[in-house]
Length: 153
Image (tube, rainbow, N blue to C red; front, top):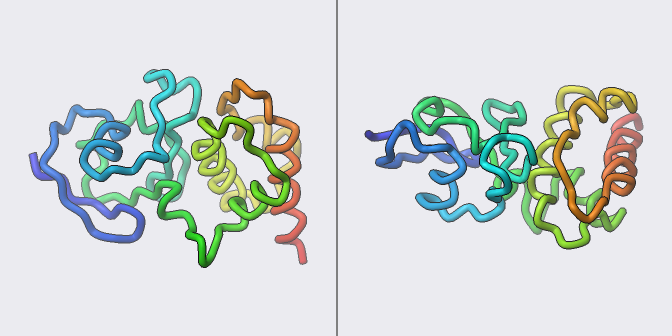
C-alpha cells in the first residue's frame, strides 16, 4: 500500500504493509538509524519518535496509521548547524555513555519540554519512562532542567 506522510518536515511516500510497525518503516525504507529496536513492545523507549508532535514508541505504531501525519525522528529534530536545545544540553551535560537509548531519550525529553517548558520533577518522572542500561538518569534530569531553566529567560 502507498503511504504518504511528512517525515522530518518533508513529504514522503513509501510502499509498505500498513500493518508494519513504524519502527521498521523508518529504519528499512528511509534508513533512519536513530530509531532503535529495543524491546518491540513499547516498554524501553529506544524507538521513540514524535507523531504530530507527541512522543510515541515507533514499535507500537502501525505504518498505516501514519498516513497524512507528521513524524519527526532525531535526524529531523536538529542538525550540526542548529542543534535542538535538548541536543545541546545532552552534549553540555555529557548525558550518554553507550548512547544506544539516547535518541529515544532526547525525543521524549524534547516532546516533554515542548508540552511543558518548565516541568516539575513529577512531570519529568511521568514523561521520561525510557530505559537506560547505563543508568544515565541523573544526567538526563540535569539536561532537562538545563533546558527548562534556559527557557525561563
